[in-house]
Picture (spheres, helix red, strand yellow):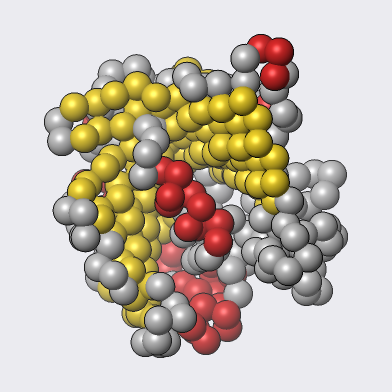
Length: 303
């Protein structure tokens, strides 16, 4: 949860976007319509999409959860154009951000890592440029503000522990490969009718409702959509107990793309002589991190 709150707090003041970065060229038009519109106006290719499960075999929510639990068996990397919308009930504020999401299992450590490269923010009808990166390397979360030349690096997972940034508690709740038993322990799961319109037509549609009604759990519901053939996540809508809404929508997903710029996952500290302000913080002995000391799953080494 700490990572989610860090990201959410940071994103309140930042801007995502459309850009040419990390091995893929994205439209520089403010709405990024080439990627986040109906299928007929999308010009980005979908790469290396291979079905993980026979769609005909998924008829119940139990079937879907079983399929999703193993859907990451051969998932080494993943990228997509991302649209992030945060609706703050208290402030009556809605912000929309655009950018690119990258995910990989690091070959040298088996740590799950992500990078989100945001460049544009929309308030009302106005789009603003603001190039900012958020990268999680399995241990550290970095925030890189290019225009301001500011770099923040925070330790959020202790050495020897693991954390999945795409879990329900992550900054982008797009669970794939998450244990069915873990989800059902925390949520009631319902398989809804497939979407019938737009880019989500035919997608599997699942609703998770929190069992814990106490304040210990910030989540009320999580609504998820998955591509019917690849089981890649396409959209998530999170409703918190405060009434705040967070929406993550993915377009042009690429599963195990042949070319993925590994430099997007870099958490290297920039040179202060280049004008950067740098802040690095570590977990104190008293602070709890996000990670879990647990028996690693096949393919993990627990680092």
